[in-house]
Length: 138
Ligand SMILES: [Zn+2]
Image (cartoon, rainbow, N blue to C red; front, side, top):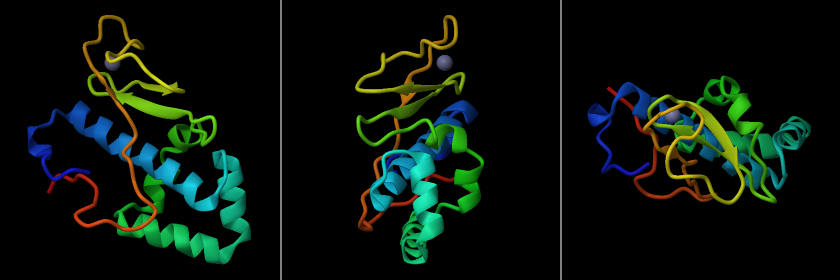
């Protein structure tokens, strides 16, 4: 997540949306790392392959994810697919979630007259990058 974002300037809902978009991004990263198309296949592969499990854990660790973060949000990660790609976006105002394939309207359409926008999944690379990491409030 970009360091340009100052978490103290975010509303609680915006912060939650960012956090959940990071979880969604981690979900996509896990599908990529395990070369699977959906969450149940990824979990099955990780359970069956200790080396792969270590690789996934190491990468999540780099990004400062705890397994519990993912476990608490399996509804988000399990809605996502690799190909054709399905992602989950989170509204910055009402924190509704919406699965989408290619595109999603700019504005929240899940809650009546909500003025929030959709926070899309964070994009994480397989290889560690400099200055990556999650947003946090100290
Ligand atoms: Zn909304």
